Image 1: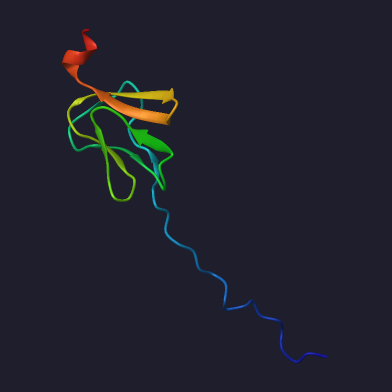
Image 2: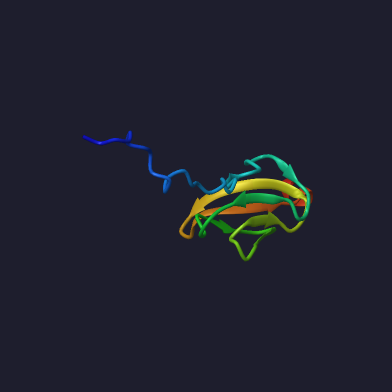
Length: 88
C-alpha cells in the first residue's frame, strides 16, 4: 500500500492572460481618427474606406465618421463613412 496520499501534479496550473480580442465599436457608432474598431488574430475583418490595418491585424479608423460593416466578395469589410459622405 502507498504510504503517501496521491498529490495533484505540480505541472498543472498555467494559463495565459486573455488578449481582449473582438469588435470594440459596432456598426452605426461614431469614431474619431485613430480609434480601434476591431482587435483580431488574422484578417477575419478586412479594412475598407477610412480604415487602416495594424501589424497585429487591428483595424482602426483613419478619420472621424460612422462605422459600417459590409459583406462582399472580399469577406467582411469595415469602413468609416465621414459626415459629408452620409448626406449623399
